[in-house]
Image (tube, rainbow, N blue to C red; front, side):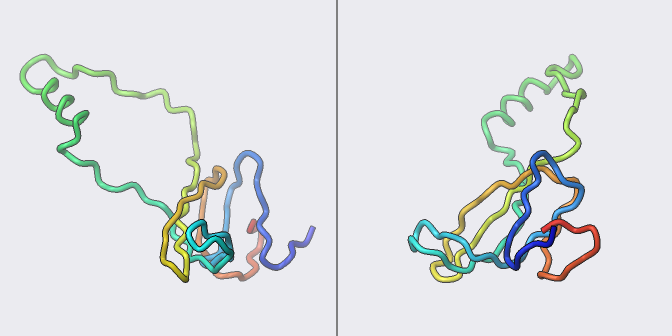
Length: 118
């Protein structure tokens, strides 16, 4: 069925491809009203070498004796949940939301592409 302008189709488990708008009008908890938000895809930062778990792991690995802790190989998931950072256009406050799983995710302008889900 055709989508209304500005509406988002929600996939219940996961979608092959999701196109998401770069700007979205949504609620800002700091301003306590709806305003236009800039959408940025969340990316994991670099791990700190000084974190307690990393220091403990490096200490245990050092010296003779080979691999000391199990390495996980039985990966079951083929997709990851997509995290988005929304930045308010008025107060510049960032808040994060998680949308459903998808194999392919794109931030795009609102143009209709063939076989695309908004």
